[in-house]
Amino acid sequence: MAYKIVRKEVLNPQIFLMEVEAPLVARKAEPGQFIILRIDEYGERVPFTVADFDREKGTVTIIVQIVGKTTRDLAQVEEGEYLLDFAGPLGMPTPLEGIKKVAVIGGGLGTAIAYPQAKKLHSLGADVTVITGFRDKSLIILEDELKAVSDKLIITTDDGSNGVKGFVTERLQELIDAGEKFDEVIAIGPLIMMKNVCKVTEPYGIKTTVSMNPVMIDGTGMCGGCRIIVGGETKFACVDGPDFDGHKIDWDSAMKRGRMFREYEQRSCDEGHCRIGRSNSNA
View 1: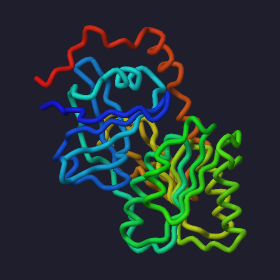
View 2: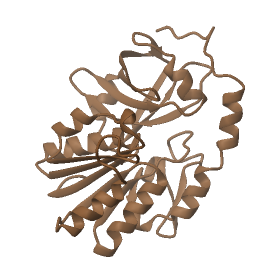
View 3: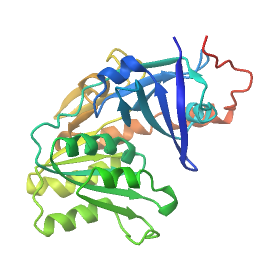
């Protein structure tokens, strides 16, 4: 079985959206879960968090940042073409029931993962504040979509090019200082950003959920590549997560593991990433 790309949209020079026809995945998908895809018979298995889904249309949306060989290959697959594998939904859905007031924080591409969380919470009647951060104005994504599912939307840029300069942690601290009382904070983005969000919330005892997305191979807990330390215990992000209590994460070990494969990824990119000659049919 192959999976048709029914929509492809470039969000900025490094990030694009793909809506994929995958009715069995769409039927079960929930915010926080992920899929593992393979472009073709030559491709590696790569996980992507579900950015949205439409049960009626039978589609699942992923948002991809071009950072390595496979994401560069994926960027060359066009609307109307097919992916060989699209397995999921995998991982545990984010527990969102019962939350009354929440801050959902997204950093960079993490905004794409924060969107379905905010969307579901909004549909459940929660008071949703969304804070997102980007390096500059040109990289901002999903602004209109986030406006539609939040009671308050704050978009920051490192350089202030959108008029709001600073980091998501600064905006969160300002809200807390102003008397906002959140039942929970959900943070999704680079490890250092999530770590710093947890530093802000911990003194106030605010429950903080983070989405951990280390290297994953099989998505079933067998390879051990996605292991992280949570509360002194080894957990596997693909089956135990990807969401965890941010105050219990061993951030130093997580960041060290996150740097382990950079040399190999760079070598793979240097060897070339062109998909010329590879088949991508619906056969």
